[in-house]
Length: 447
Image (cartoon, rainbow, N blue to C red; front, side, top):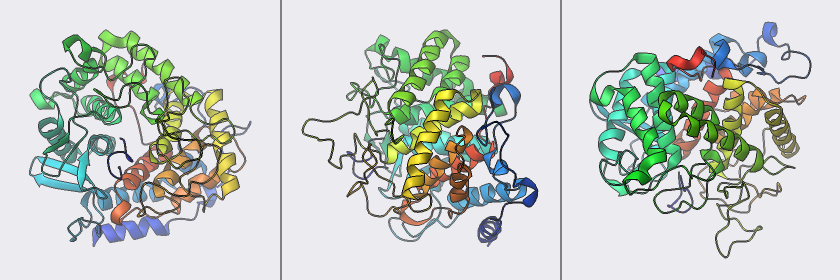
């Protein structure tokens, strides 16, 4: 959330890492292309939620399940249980997960030495997808006791960042973080069942989701804009525009089941979210802005110009996630023509830039920016590599496997940039392997 405005946003392990990285050659038995008839590598007209079979573009690109599972395990071990680092900033380490007490843990934004709801939501989701309940509960306890707002109009929202002790640094809200936390809780309810109080995952999710539409009933500000049915940028103050990467249509079907009293609103949010993901990207390049007006046009602050390097209206870190948001929707609920067109457009642009060499920040017309929000991130950033690889789920362009291979050949992020790039890298592995699933009880029923 708000990466540029709020500073710069956002021996077992070694053996596992080595094993995964050595297994880079596609299996000959699996090297055949995806299904015929011009479909994408992971094309599924129905979607994994109904069939139980989520698109696996790693397999379609020729990588064995054993090798993919080893890479996922190595990445989990490195990012969650690797070297924490000895430098004061932890910039020399591998892990982003820190166990504060036996039942409290946080994920640290290494570049800023703070804790953000975005990262907490990602980490909770990764933990539930992989079945790691201890880490999930530890993260949720920190989010619940240190970050969740307990009174007032924004009750049940989360303060978007704290320091590593849990001291709140800002009471503003990052809707991406709140949505990911709520989705992770809904998944935990389905995968592990509900306990009591803090561990009544389903009820905790429902409270958060209800507040997103009804905080105004208690004098607060809703996360979702009533007219557009899209998430605003940051309640309670910055609510006149959105962020395309906050549009998470696949989650809205989960939310409609978890919060049935507002099903009609979540259905409208699903339609609006898909529309935002279609409107925000540039028609020639597929590049979306980090922030957008509710009609999908780039958001610009007073004094900004289209040719400047401002974070808001250019393709930078927030906007990378738009790619996966469109393709997770395709993976879960079936590929639609607009998703194929979008992914083809995006891949065509990045093929022209060089699949293994493109830079990571652009004007929407495809001109590289001359400066970005930080200097420590690799030019060919692992987070964007991971998000671009998901385009193979819906694309039917001839060279779509190149983007999957680029992710496979990218080392697990470490060092100063390992927080954001590491989270997106881990999620990319889950998306591309078909292991990012809807675990809620309604997952295999008609929606």
